[in-house]
Length: 173
Image (cartoon, rainbow, N blue to C red; front, top):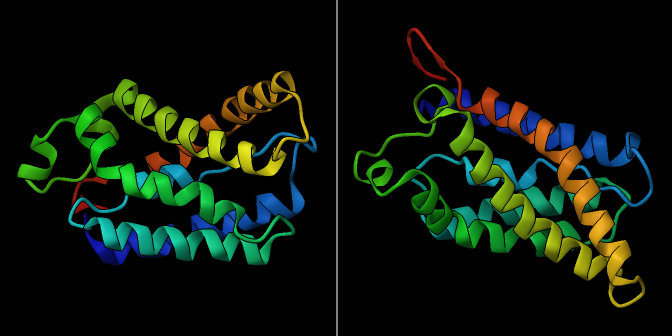
């Protein structure tokens, strides 16, 4: 993946996340987030430290520029960044790292991309909701919040990932 095409798209996706957090919350207790999917589909050459650093920067930007709890996105996003390599190997296989390839919709298909996105979103939202609810909400309310958040975030995240991993005729975007 050519990094000169990746970074402007990544920055644009983070800005879109800030806009969604500030101006387009569907209902008060439904969270829409594409951050976990963005972290999962960072270039394969990144090491865990780089993943964690970028997750921290993206999370803190969203936290500071939106009207949420400062540190909430960071706290939920860092475990996703830490588990990124393991999840990528689990879903896409070790060959991805051995060949230093990037994930693409054309090569890996909708099912594998969907499974990977749903895994990272589940990890992100479990931590996000656990910290945000902090014992003030019932289990059923938190489960409903989790289901609604995953159902609304998945299509948006899949669209964002398909833009980040799109392959054109001249090579990787």
